[in-house]
Amino acid sequence: MKNIQDYWAKKAKKAGLRSRAAYKLEEINKKHNLFYGSKIIFELGSAPGGWSQIIAKLKDKCSVCYSFDCLNMADVKGIKFYKYNFFDDEFKEFSKDFFSKTDLILSDMSVNLSGISIKDAEENKQLNFFCLELSKKLLSSRGKLLIKSFNNENLKDLKKEFLNNFQNVFIEKPQASKTSSSEVYLLGLNPK
Ligand SMILES: C[S@@+](CC[C@H](N)C(=O)[O-])C[C@H]1O[C@@H](n2cnc3c(N)ncnc32)[C@H](O)[C@@H]1O
Image 1: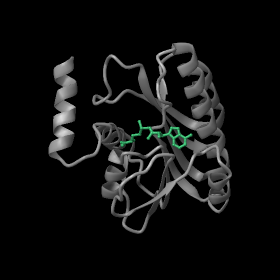
Image 2: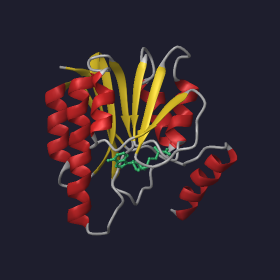
Image 3: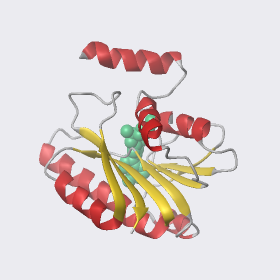
Image 4: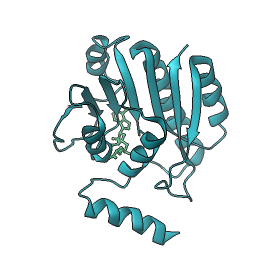
């Protein structure tokens, strides 16, 4: 199993990608064509920038991607980065201009794992529901929401909420995601 992880890490390094995670987005995109028609893109939790590098490569030239993280991130050409915490007023103010205008929201966010599984699961659940609530305000009528989640007792509730809010819902486990990790990605298409 370690060899598989080494494979993705080495591949990313060789390709000049900042994270192995970049391949997860690339794979999900191959299946769902996320960037088609996506003129305004929000990327939540972007540092160190592996997904941003893929977004810059795959998005239409005329599309704009706003990427956010509470940590610093080195520039990625073609991406507008803002150092915001999503729970701060600065982000809330910024996002108001994009209500009902955003075509694609991508979140690879997770909390720093403490090792206390109940605490980690609860905090990640809060992040997941934050993304879902934000999507209700931001997404355009044909918008798409992709978020990282975890296959634990919260996933059922989250999937139910996705089904309440989107016409089409998918759960993806890309090959570059560690098989030992419970990480999965939820995709909602076409808000109801
Ligand atoms: C797994 S990393 C993202 C990796 C990225 N997709 C890549 O390919 O390089 C998750 C990011 O979410 C960010 N994050 C978590 N909670 C946040 C919050 N409340 N506000 C802003 N960023 C947050 C973390 O700082 C971290 O950089």
